[in-house]
Image 1: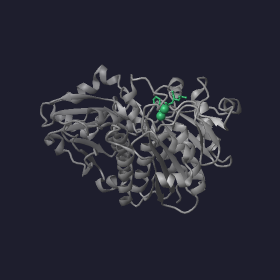
Image 2: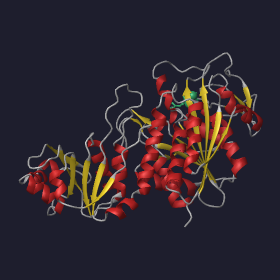
Image 3: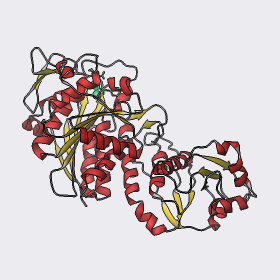
Image 4: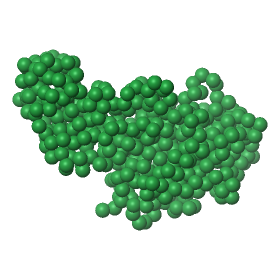
Length: 487
Ligand code: BES
Ligand code: MN
Ligand code: ZN
């Protein structure tokens, strides 16, 4: 699995600016006197830095953006990156600077002359942007060179970055899982990978098909019954505090053909990302364990594959959920909600959570509503929704609250069963959320995140090159820091 070279923290010194053979990064604002690292680079390059900073191009840069001088004379470096940054930068500006550094990274080591700037946000962002998925290449590109951070108090900076590194590693894990093809990452290999996470101190439980049958998760099992890969429910518990846990539930459809309601061929290959909710849940649990969060959080992921087959469920079938409510399956392509219905119910019955959050690449309709910049946020609890929107904003992940309501709920009433699994085209993302809400106890704070538009992007996004984004790991981690950690 791809991850990154651990950043090195070095005491600040001026001599490495001349001798470093990879990339060198210095910072300054347009109108201040050059800070000491930029000044040394300026001296070595006989004034090139000052001329660059005085240029119209530099004047147009936003804080955190930079320009690059290739093979600067007077230095050993392959490139000198000059990043515009105020002396007292905002967190978002530091993040932007890190993204600029990560985007420019090559296989050479990057020496970042931070000096007295705070390291965590910048380093985390650089690591998030410098990601590439090479696992399926027979001739993989060389990995990115290490980030070497020259900073005033190297040991303190290194300590300050442990959380940032855990988060970045977690986002990389989520992306690797989402990018992985469905013949490589199956319900079984995913479950095996989760089982190995016990080494981090997570308590892992995996329910196989007989156990799921026994517990009554018939709606989840119905989705997977046409697949050669057995359905699973994987539970990852991080018990870093006492009290009722926060439950995080992820949709893990390893591949979504649509089932008997088969999807069109064009673009179907994208449905390898239909386990994005499970991938975010697993990445989040890894981050919590690695940074030893003082929070009680349980992650539950329903792992299934939606295939057409002689044994597959059909449109018109009626299945009984674990809750006991019956569901008329109008469209076998509305499978995610069948999986989540049972996992939501299982989580509430077995863990009595203080709040429950689910993540799912649930509907194409949310892409029509919000595009690829913001995930849909549905909640029965205004406080939880507001806390999450604040957390998402603080890490630069897009999120937008969507409505729920009785009028939408009526769309999924069924003539022959308790409900049907589709509500027609109008408000498709909302009727999907209404379906889930029927499996949430009314007094349990619940939030549903429809990440179909944000899990995988066709062009570079804020934090990530094109492909899997890892959206949600940072926002949920920030929510847990703000609202679910003790002391
Ligand atoms: N996994 C899809 C939703 C999806 C679409 C995710 C595009 C990512 C990109 C989901 O299972 C699905 O097929 N939803 C249907 C529901 C419909 C049949 C009611 C949809 O959105 O078309
Ligand atoms: Mn589907
Ligand atoms: Zn799906």
